[in-house]
Length: 372
Image 1 (spheres, helix red, strand yellow):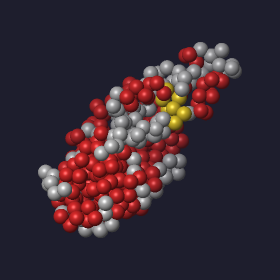
Image 2 (image 1 turned 90 degrees about the vertical axis):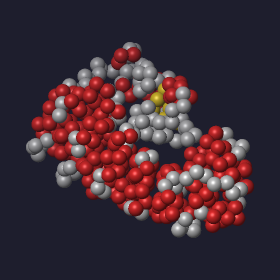
Image 3 (image 1 turned 30 degrees about the vertical axis):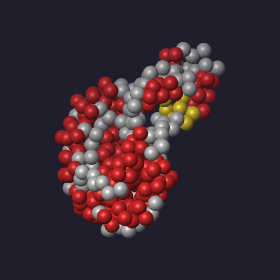
Image 4 (image 1 turned 180 degrees about the vertical axis):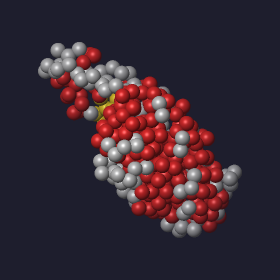
């Protein structure tokens, strides 16, 4: 029978580090023991404990039946002694040494192994950033040879390193933003989506929001991805914009780079994160001025009021409130389209933020102006 120490690491909950008895999948794609992730959610967290990125609201926990079955059956068979993990320091040295050579296989293997080790190990992430490996990693991100997914693997490792707040500012100082923006615009495979996720992670730290937003082509690159990217790429680009635009100057930059029309287009296609970004952009005068030009926007927002998630409803209410307070014609149109009645119904919603935003919108529709 296998002892606890012989279980594969994937059988352990990333929070408790104990063998999982009831594994469930979070919307981020990561698996946790139900009791541990439920405590995390009950504490008010709405981010993934591993990636620090937003999760679905309401929170969805999907049973991981396959993993539960594996764990249950694991003790029924005999296994050889697990292979020891490769030495992280030797992998780092291999990555640094191969950064100036053409040994693609060595690079790919080092990146694969280091990504697995660093995903949940703070000490290894710290060792990577202190060893000079970031420079070699950036060379991989900038590589033109992506036959084996070199750029994508390097971006995944960068994402792992960016999980720690202590690393975020240092990574930006080492020139990560320029390489990531380049991958955002010209990356292959899943590189563009991962690049957008890296920007989101880096922008969690307030000072990085200003640095990334001011970087040439950063916001423009995310908006370009919203125009022509895949479903995943567009979602990650919208998430990055949402994070960056909590910094006021970036809202103006986004509007100037034509974010409003593409966000409306994506919202009309069902991308809820676009509604959240519209709500943030509506907080600036330039954003409101641009939005009122689009006569179909109100219909799109009403659609989310009726059928969106709690978070989408919250931001749709916010956007309409700001626009109606800014423009009388929009207020009259909203009343005519039944927004007042919809908002009254939302006063009974289970979500406190939805109720609060619905109440604010009702006051605006009755003639009270918001402080803009």
